Image (cartoon, rainbow, N blue to C red):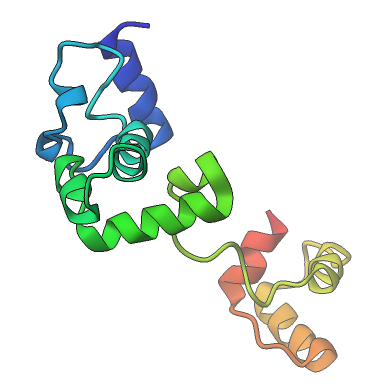
Length: 142
C-alpha cells in the first residue's frame, strides 16, 4: 500500500491525526515510510511506547507525537482499559435515542400509516407515560 492510498484509507476511517504537522518524533521523520505522522493510531501507540519503553516523560512524549499532556493521560487510560481498541477514538455524541424503547418501537410499527405522528405522540404519552417528539416517531417509522 503506497502512502497516498494509505492516507485515503485513514481519512475514510476517520483516523487521520488532527495535528500531524506537530509530530516531531524521530520515527516519523520520513526516512521510514511505515511510520506516517498522519496515522493517528500509530502516533498514539508510538507515543505510549516512547513513554513506557524508552522512558520518555509524558509531556515530552505527548509533544513529540502531536498531543497535549492531558490527552496523553486520556490515551494511556483508554489503552490500559481496552488495549489497541482504546487507541481508536470512540463515536461522538449519543448512542441512539434515549426514550425510544423496543416496546414503543413495536407499538409504532403496529400502527397503520393513516395514523398521524401527532396522534401517536398523544397515544404514546397515555400508554407509556413518555413524551416523544413527532420527528422521533417519523424517524422510527422509516
